[in-house]
Image 1 (tube, rainbow, N blue to C red):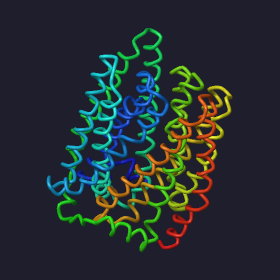
Image 2 (spheres, rainbow, N blue to C red):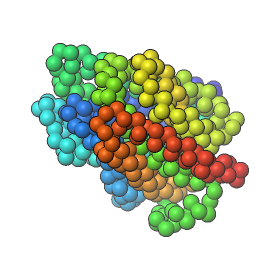
Image 3 (cartoon, rainbow, N blue to C red):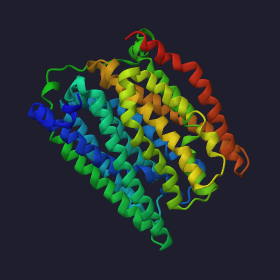
Image 4 (cartoon, rainbow, N blue to C red):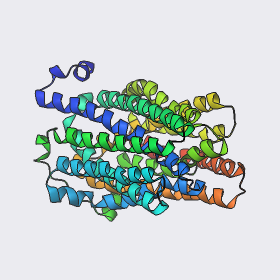
Length: 418
C-alpha cells in the first residue's frame, strides 16, 4: 500500500497521473484557503464590522451557498460530466475574489456586498464538493484510499500553514506601515489566481470510470428515510450535531483574539497556526489509527478532544498558551475531518453520494448558522465586556459535552454494522 502511494510508477499511467494531479491541486487549493478564506473574518475586522457581523461571515454565506448547491445534481446532469461541473464551479469560486480585491483597493466594502461575494464563493465551493467526492472516489484505488487521503490531507495542512503564516505576517507588516488594505488586495488576488490554476489542473484529470455510472437522485423524504433505515450512514447526523455545538463559539474566536485580547496579527498568526501544525503532525498517525480502530472511532475521538477548547481559551495565558490550546484544537479537528471523509467513501454508495452530500451540506450549514446565531445572541444581549465571549464559550463547551454523550452512539452503533 505504501509503495503504491509513494511510487506512482507502480500504477497504470492514468491512475498515476490522476493521483499526482490531485496532490498538486491540493497545494493550490490550500494556498487559496490560507491566503483567502482564512482571512475573510480579519478582513471584516479591518472593515470595522461588529463582532456579530464578523461571526456571521463564517456561517451565513456558507448557509446560503449550501442552499444554492442543492442544484448541483441537476447541474451535473445538465453538463453531462462530474469533472466538467467541478471545473465550472472552481472557476466561479476563483472569480468570487474579484469583489474582495476591488473592495480592498477602495478601502471600503459594504456588508451586503461582502456577504454576496462570500455567498458566491461558498456556493461554488459547496456545489463542487459532492461531485468531486463522488468523482475522485473512483480515481483512487480502494486499497490505498486511507493512506493516500491521510497523506494528501497532511500536504494540505502544510501548504495552508505556510500560506496562512505568510499572509499573517504580511498583514502585520502592512498594518504597521499603513498599507493593510493593499496587503488584502495582494492576498485575495493571489488566492483567486491559485483557484484558477486549480481549475486547469482538475480539467486535466480523467473521468473514464464515471461515464458508465448513473447518478441516482434522492428526495428529501428519501434522504431522511435512509438516515433512519441505515445505521451505517448515521455518522452524518453526528457530524451535523457536532457542527451545531461547535459553531456556538468557533466563529467568534477570531474577534475574541483580535478585539478582546488585542492580539497583533503576528501573535494572531502564531495562535491560529497551531491548528495547522497539529493537523500536519497528527494526520499520519491518525491514518494508521483509522485503519486499526475504524474511521468512526477516530471521528468521535476528535470531537471529545475539541470539547473543552472554548473554556481553555478564556484563560489569558499569553500567545504561547493560546498556541498550546490550539494544538489540541487542531488535532481534534484533524481526527473529526479525516474520519468523516473516510466514512463518506466507505458507507455512502457512489450512485447516491452526490445527491446525499448536497443535502447533508445544507443540514451542516443550517446547524452552523443556528449555532452561531445562539453564540451571537449571547454576545449581543450580554454585557459589552469580555463576559460576552465567556458566556458563549461556556455554552458551547456544555453543549459539546451533551452532544458527545448523546450522539457518539450514532457512530459506534454504525461501526458494529460493518
